[in-house]
Amino acid sequence: MIGKSSEKAFEKSSASDSPGNSLPTENDPFIPAGDFIAWLTATRSALKTNSEAEVDCRDCTGCCNSAYYITIRPEEKKTLAQIPSRLLAAAPQGSPGLKVLAHDAQGKCPMLVAGQCSIYAARPQACRNYDCRIFTAADIAPGGADKARISERVVRWRFTYANAEAQAAHQAVRAAARFIRDHAIHFPGGRVPDQPSQLAVLALKVYEVFLNSGSGPTGLGPTELGPTGLGQPRLGATEFPLDAAQLAAAVVAASRRFDEGQ
Ligand code: SF4
Image (cartoon, rainbow, N blue to C red; front, side, top):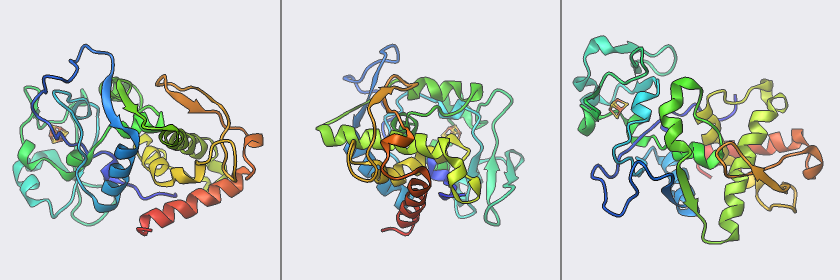
């Protein structure tokens, strides 16, 4: 499978625990997601450095109520010390010592108490790094019914764009996600990320392959509304000078370059 499985994709941070006066309320339809290029640059950097995301979570606990299994690395000793051992299980795969914090039958993290993270200061790195705007950026849903709470937030984020290049970059991220999802057969082993978060992260890593809308080797066609109401590239074989197999190879190469820090 291309693209590293990344717990970072699930990582959440609450840079602002205190609601700001100028911010919209939970009843407002849209929530400012920030300048798209600034967000994209920061998020790609965070993926490379395993840094915390800066997300205005405010009182949203969507990801804490969306049936995520949270992986915790053995070196996260402060976090592990805060969680009752009965709530931790060995990860079925991954490095030795990797633990998993499971959710309850309702999809709620057991560390969420009275609507707040009871171990916030020592919360897992996976939670610190989670940024649900990756789904908004890639225009893909976080999952099915068990992800309903986080999906509510994903559709409310709205990015801003300083110029046409910023809009083209966002189109390229969406195009990357759609192409990877719809053309698995052209990837090595016919395998692409099956988890929405992994797919979104991969799209962020390789979006540059899909830049240069309408021209060049990876030109895009016109846009149409996607499931989140945002513009979404319409992909078709005739719209790409490169065929699907060549594009898939370019995606694989771009993913490798990203993971190697280039
Ligand atoms: S550990 Fe805390 S931040 Fe992470 S999912 Fe559970 S309640 Fe949310």
